[in-house]
Image 1 (spheres, rainbow, N blue to C red):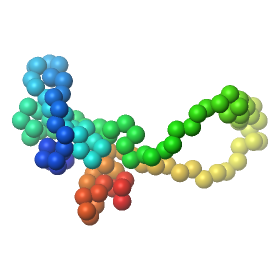
Image 2 (tube, helix red, strand yellow):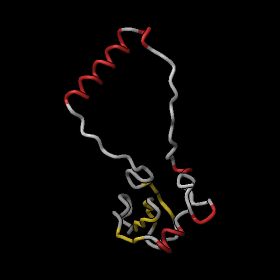
Image 3 (cartoon, helix red, strand yellow):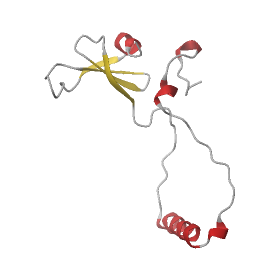
Length: 112
């Protein structure tokens, strides 16, 4: 059922055949998710998000200075337990459930 939008609106390419039976598979890419279906396109076999989907993070070049600072911080945390402090940690959920398109306007939960 999740793949029905992908079959209808997505980009269809030939997938790798089933390793056990040799049956043909199709890959549909839609809304940053790849769906693999059987030959009929009716039964979803597996799916996964496109790498980096939903994330718009600029790449940063790691300079030797940045690497040294990182290594020093790691050693400090290992060697001096008193250096541990409380911080806010933000967790961004990009799991499969967040890729469901069940939000008004056809958006995913992540996009909402």
